[in-house]
Amino acid sequence: MKNDNNVSRKIIILVIVLVLAFLGGREFYEIRHFKQSIIVSDSFTKRFMLSDYSEGIKGTWADTPVYLYDSGEPGGSMLLLGGTHPYEPATMLAAYVAAENISVKKGKVYIIPAANYSAMTLGILGNAYPKYYTLDTEWGSKKFRIGDRNTNPLDQWPDPFTYVHYPSTQNLAYQDIRNLNRTYPGRPDGALTERLSYAIMELIRRESIDLYVDMHEASLMYPVVSTYVAHDRSLDICMMASMTLSAEQFPIKCEASPKGLRGLSHREVGDFSNTLAVLIETAEPFIDRVAGRITEELMVTGKDEFLQTASEAGLLYCQPEYDIDFGVPIQYRVGRHLSATMEAIKWMNEFFPEKELIVDFPLFADLMEKGAGYFLNDPEKADENKLFYN
Amino acid sequence: MLFLSEVIHQIYFVMAALFALLLLRGLFKRKTRKTLIYDIVYAYSIIPFLLRALHIK
Image (cartoon, rainbow over all chains, first blue to last red; front, side, top):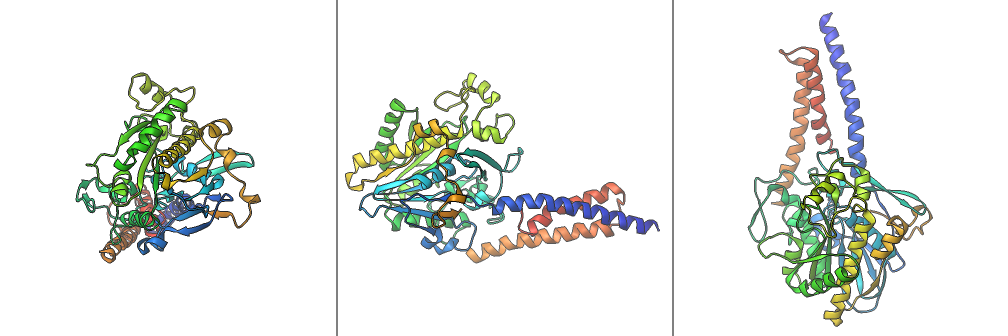
């Protein structure tokens, strides 16, 4: 009789646990399969998958949509990347704002809003990070996913004890084999993230991309925050862009890509193609280790009292200096990215007139005046030929 | 290399399923630590292995 009771008890516990597993699992499933609407601008030409350039990622979660805006007028070309690290979501938002509002008058622009799509399909481990943030728009609110830094372990696992970067053979941290910004230039038969890097390189090489812009966000305690990082060939462009922006709009530093740090886009993309490789960093309080409660509000406003204390102690590297009254709001970060990209284009046009690219999209002043949500269109009222889900 | 890496990757899912089954067996058939608290521990320990085996987390 007692044995029967024990079995019943175990079954009841098991059922409760399965219900909990279902409830938790449903959240993980939702973030894995969440789709972001994107309503492309009038300059849109076509959408294709990155695997068109390398079979190695076809049918995997690393394959990601590419949006092409071709003016039909011969000129320069640019590849704009958001979401290399999806836990830096202002980069993806900047790509969405550009994709929904861009006008290309000369040359062509390729936009990849979620460069590491797989890394966007899970949340950040630990610290109770929220999975989404919400923006107010003219037509209601819009939800955005906050992903992780590295490729989802469901798609690439296990990590090696030491990651040996190809082709330099430099030893890197084991988890960086799932970090898109440590696996360039990649290889067609490597780990999934290496194959993803290779596919991006193939797009750059085959389409003779003139300017490559990789958008990132950094913690405020990281010295490379609020910075252009430029490959040797793009250093002049970025130095001029940095000086112009700092004098006229907002302070932004410029650094030369170190030759000894392998796998990073600003180094390898420039070394293994003819493009002008540029990486841009803004400040993201959300990923600082000293920040207080990690909330959706912190993601959107960037206001945190612990960061203010760190700022007063001189521990932060962001420019301008952190001020809790202003914070680092998401429209500010998106605006910085878009204006920094535009300034790089302008200076490329100055230095290399044969690569002239004439584009228009919302800039820093527009974002600060109207907010990021203003530039996002309503999917319910969109022309179905222009509506995509990413 | 691609094939080998895919095989190793899939083995991890199979391992997760096996661990889930072992824990399930332990929940019902174990000989020691038969109290309620151990029933709960065995049962909730199944969750991460189950979610991994189902390619959810």
